[in-house]
Image 1: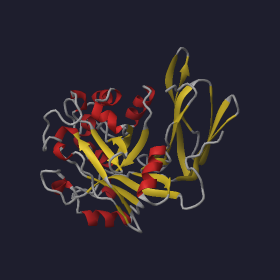
Image 2: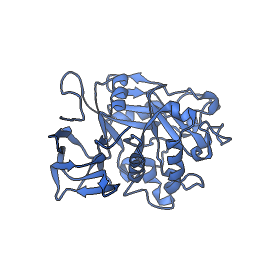
Image 3: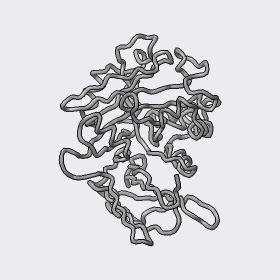
Length: 345
């Protein structure tokens, strides 16, 4: 068996770089959303996204609708140079016309849950900045265990969205980490990701800037850019479909190879081969049988290299790999989890 992140290397499919978390001042009335106050001017955001240091092939703009306008998404657009994908972030703590009166997602555990949907109604839904209200902007009731509880035992509305992943990296959280109770880096939201995976929740890892809506911040000067690399044709539908299939990796500045992950199984051992464009610090996180229980094991490559081979046998539920720049620990790439023989849906 051979596994590769991309589905093929022919036709129009290629690696596309994009930001799935961008806010603009879409031309909506004030009673629909807060974005006229907080979003950057739409055309400026789009133009800036095309240029250095971003050079995005696609972006997902998103609006924060109030509960009466819950089906409102930003405007999508297929341009020759950049694809604009419609999006919506449900900000549960302010969704009742700027306040909280029970929210759209029911239950106290979901009060500070933010869910971004990429691609319009029926698109890919993501839990945004899962520890933001525990670390960066502490709020009573916003702790990760409560967010986790809401995700693991979702209300009907949350269940309908079928949340497929979480933001492992959120640019705004890095920019504002000095305001919080504890630093967001160097772990970002990696512990939240593994927490969900260890509890049997299939979960992709995303990186987003949460960007362009505060002019006082120049992201590229103070935090790495968060983005996805998606293997896809360059149109909104295919990009969203390939995100849904897991044909992507998340990054804050590390570029992986054309075939970043390959897996083979010989009947006894799983062999993984990883590839990056240049030398990186590889590491693996595996949830495997250890005695009578399952436990997390973290293993790092012994040296900096563009390639790494990793062998695994026995009973394991999932393994995921990540790469880190040897010169800047904030610059990383996260591959999506591979589920093992003991996962069991």
